[in-house]
Image (cartoon, rainbow, N blue to C red; front, side, top):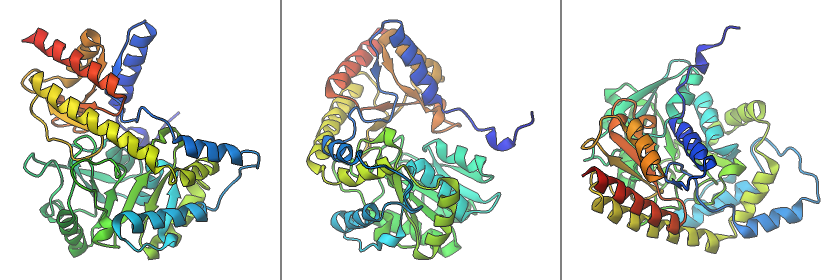
Length: 380
C-alpha cells in the first residue's frame, strides 16, 4: 500500500536509547537514566487524591477548548506569576504540548511555509512541521548567543514563523525580557508568526522565567503540565492564542481531538493547589544540577552552557569522539549510564554532543556522575 511523504519523519533517537537501556535492565543490569526528559516523580499527591474523589462520577467529553475552570485557573496563574492580565477565553487546553504544536502549525501556516528553529532544538518541532507540509528552517546558533535564535535571523531566513524555547531543550538556556521583546519585534516587523515554547517554566534556578505574553499579545504561547507539574503520562497542556484566533483554533481542536482527556484536565486543575510539593521537586533539580555541573568538570567534560532552567546539560564531547551515538552506546555498555546523543537536537552538529538529564532522584544523579567520572578516567 502506498504511503504519504508526511510519514517520512526521522525517528526520535532518545526513544531508541530508552529501549537499549530497557533491554540492559531486562538483562539484569542497573542503569542510571540520564537520557529522558521526564521527572522522576509523578503527579502531585494532592491532585491525585482530588481526582480519585471525582471518579465516582462519569467522565465524558469536555468542550473543545477545555474545562472552563481550568482555563480560568491558568489565566490566574499568569497574573500571579508574571503580572499578565489574561482573558481566560484565550486559553486552549490541549493534549500535551505536542497537541498544541499541531494546532498552532495548522492554524498559522499554509503548505510550504518556512518556520525557523534555532539549532540545537527539540526535535519534534521539525518532524511535526514536516508531517503537516511545512518547511523547517534550521538556523545555527552560537555559544555567544547561548544557543538561542537572534532577531536578525527572522529577516535573514525569510521566515513565515519562528519558534523559540525558554528554558530550552536540550541546553537549558533562557531568554530574558529584552531578548524576547527583540524577537517579538523582529517577527512583527515582517509579519512572521511568533511561537514561544514555555514548557519548562517553573523550573529555573538563578533567575525567573519570563513569558512572551509580557512583551506581546501577538504570539502563540505553548505550555504543559508535563515538566514542572510532573504529569508527563497524563498528556495535558495548554496554549495561549491571540483573541482573534480563538475560534479558528477551537474548530481545529474540535475536529482533531474533540477535547483533551477529561480526567487529565481535572487532575491539572487540582495540581495548582500543590505548590509546596512541586516546589520541593525544584529543590531536587537544583541540587542535581549542582552535582552534575561539578561532576562533569571533574570528568573533563567542560564544554557546555550552564543551564538557566529545565533539567538538561548539553555537552560538547568533540574532544573525545566524532560519533556521539556510538559514544552514548559505549557509556551505556561500560558505565551503565543512559545518555542521549545530540543528533536528535541538531542533525548537522549533534554528532559532537550529548544531552544529560538530571530529572531523576539525587541518589541516581550522584551515582550516575560517579560512573561517568570513572568512565572518563578509564579513557585518559
